[in-house]
Amino acid sequence: MSARASDGEVMGELFEHAPCGLLVTRTDGTITRINRTLCTWLGVAADELVLQRRLQDLLTMGCKIFHQTHWMPLLQLQGSVAEVQLELRHADGHIIAVLVNAVQHGEGEQLEHRLAIFIATDRRKYERELLLARKRAEELLASQQAAQEALAVAEARLRIALDSARLRVWSIETESREARYEPGVEELLGLPAGTPVSADDYRACMHPDDLEAEHAALLAALDPARHQSYASEHRLRGHDGVERVVSSSGRAFFDERGRLAGFSGVLQDVTGWRRAEALLREEEQAARQRAILAEQLVGIVSHDLRTPLNAVVLGANLLSSGEITPAQARTTGRILSAAHRANRLIADLLDFTQARLGGGLRASLREVDLHALIADCCEELRLAWPGRMLMHVSEGEGSGTADPDRLAQVVTNLVSNALTYGDPKHPITVRSTVAPSVLQLAVHNLGACIPADLLPHIFEPLRRGEQQVKLGSRSVGLGLYIVREIASAHGGTVTVTSTAEDGTTFTVTTPR
Image 1: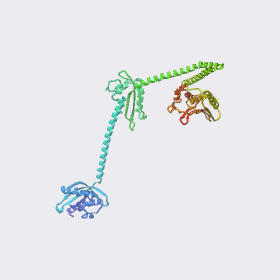
Image 2: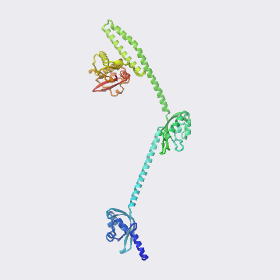
Image 3: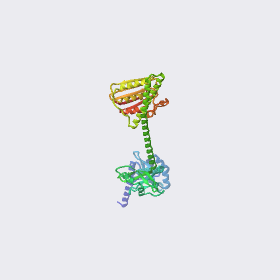
Image 4: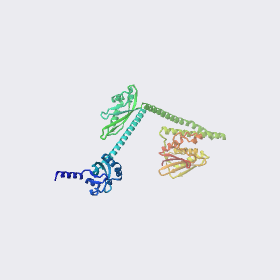
């Protein structure tokens, strides 16, 4: 075999198996030669294409139009085109993206188009990924810029807030662990504005008695095992001779290895607040002492008034026991009524003083018949209020442990309260209940309900209902307070319910 023939075989082999598709067409697009590589890509044998089909037949519809209107005129004008993106249709119908380089060769009837075709799928994928990466980078850049702007705004707002609250910022260097103080801290040390402040400068102004506690708090905050915030309040003796009380707080941040990554803190002059708190405590103490003195005085006066009142009652009883005229009888009756009313008021005042100063009322417990005790109290109250209806209902049998005098006082106070506020057209109902474990006393009346804003405070001393105030009652508002204290002395409670439909009910419950 000649060398020329051998070269021809090599060239033919290179043509058939080139790493790109090779195609030769006439000027009208008729395929005259095609290599095996391109046939494999298209899934069609060469003899089905050569002189059988045109290049346009292998293109998608959009590429056919592009070939006719742009690519072919440009090839004829320039004689060559490079890296034109086209789409070829595979035999099974799927699309193959390719890049095409083409040149015109020959003249006249020998004029032909020679094409080199490269698969562009990977390139398109790369270009798409490149575009997506570029878009993501642009979005990240925009996000970073927005975050930087938001950070700048937040820092400005923080600075305004710190300045408004007169908070001074300090931090700790991660390597040296030395405190660093920002401008403004020098004011706390009585130094001229703009004077740099070091850790030694700051600690030199700190009160000696506060140094150890402050240092211990800081060490605890810098311990990664504790995750503890730093808080200290200490005194500073400034260079201007002024002593200030400073509140210092902060927090340390650690990386995943437990190493200090940062520390931020603030300082605030709280001297004025502490002085105001001290004055307030002094005023509260003085007010408390004045209140105690006033309560003691009420107790003393109330106790001392009993002697002359007892003399008045004794004298009135002596006068009424003799032969007197009807006018004199009415006068002595009024004297006795007024004296008894004064005695009840004094008893309430003494109970109030004992409850406030003596830690609560005392009860002398003994076995009592609850129903009989309540029945006697109701009978006495009927005599005192002859024009009103008073009913007693008993439930259960047996006796319990209680202070009979104190229980009688409870009945008197609750019934008097019901008679004062209740509707005169409806009866007052007193219900005594002996249950297996409790004794219970309930007093019910119909009429205007207790205002909702008064209910939470109804058992506080010196509280009176609006109706009682309008009626000019002589009560000082201690009755319900004393009822609560008596219930407490028995280890029990007192509650109240009040609605316009069901009326008002006070219920005292004590252990049996």
